[in-house]
Image (cartoon, rainbow, N blue to C red; front, side):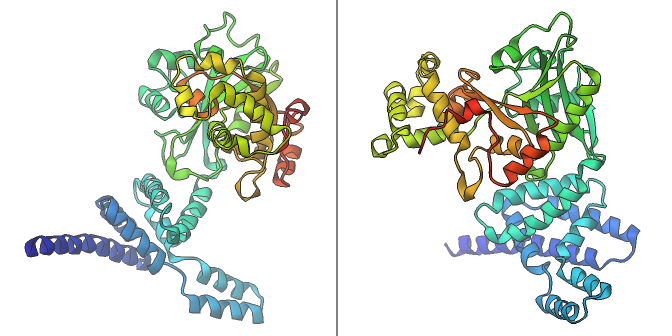
Length: 436
């Protein structure tokens, strides 16, 4: 027993030594003045971080939060000096004093070969840890601040991915597809045919890794189901007869860039590229998932009897009669898709209600995909039933999908309305909303 306790204590001591060694290297890196020596020390410091295990990551992030924060007394003195004499010199001192030293530490680490990739992995791990450790939010704020600058769209390159793209990049497209699974090389090849497009953002520091990519179908008319987009044979005339570009999948490849705006700039860049290549295309829209709808509806079905709304309650009871109150059990039924088709109208009404209601914190809509496109200046144009009958589509949204419409002349105005708390939606969608 005593030997076991001793062994555990020794292990904790060894673990602590690794973190203390890393912290000491970080402090030495911050004090280094020579550029060449700084790069060499940054390489050593990054290697020390890479050798930590997951438990040690938490200790290191705690050290970043506590030992690499601004000196409160220095900040106070600089603030008082600026308040007494608000000149540029005092403002510069206040800015220098208020910036956490860990920001400069991260800048110096980024100079080392592979620094950017390691910092992205570092933030990915931090995002996992801070869910249960709110004291790490300040560290994440600094990382997000720096990454938003380093990955400014002005530094990014938009590249079309096609069948001639190197295989190692195509493999990453297959791996990172997050919306509609790519079922092998033949499926990928279909998505890269002449009537389809795939575009990705790349960063000079990560030339072999896409940051985010979007898949587009060039068709005649707004799509109302994803199956035909994925399975249809290529058009004989390629995209020459297309009038509509449908963005049907957008996937982030770098979890460490969560919260850094990339997708909205990618879509706008792709619209510009396509408008030059295909002047005949006038409609730019999405066919988007509704990932939170099933969970929202499932919670309502369990309390149908407690609802008093004269419009929502009867529609919910109709749906409950067809689906039951246990959605996972219903979705296990092989015939669930046909049973959903029979409830098309009430489900679309409920989905419109979900999308146009207020979310947590007063957000204009609770659905994350809706927030992305609406904030980007799109309009909620149409809700489609039986649009995605894959297991994922049924599980997340009972097969429903949404068309968001991007109209160049309305994007700026739509964005401003969203920022003021309004969901911009077509009149026919608004007419479906049930009073809650």
